[in-house]
Image 1 (tube, rainbow, N blue to C red):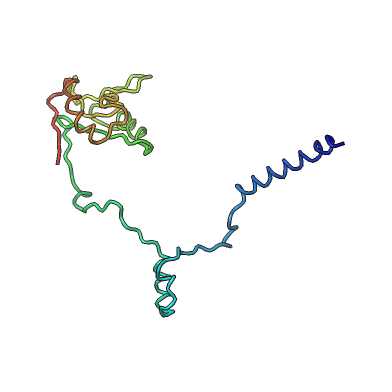
Image 2 (tube, rainbow, N blue to C red):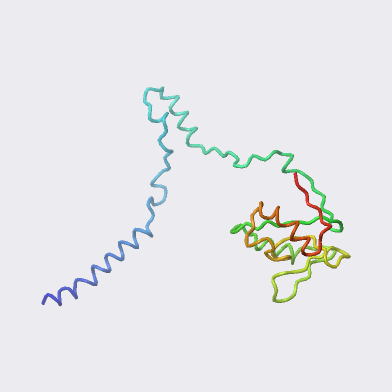
Length: 181
């Protein structure tokens, strides 16, 4: 009899447990607009000696989010014009940053830009040859889709600045110039 009772009781209990778990993850914590947002308790809100009008102004100011720039670049840096001479010795070094759409952008650099001499991409290969107009070996783009991972997998800024000149010399592009501030 005890075995029959357990067989009858176990499935409904497991189903109830499953429903509780699903409800916990699926149900909203605050349905609709039932739970208004409350600003975090700060030192001025904790003090009750202040005048009510001052407290209301401070609470209103605390409720408005302040957007401060994380990277305050000067306007001159953002609006700077840079001349890129593809026929000359200039090279674009593409710094690939993971999880930012860098792979898609890098592919667009070698496949979809309208240039005087577009990059030559063979079917089925990731690397493309991005030679300068009128040049055989000299390249204008240093990226994983043009030179491969010449400076290592996901090389950062410091690795690239020390590696790119040597990698370009190994490729036979010794005449390229490096711009540094």
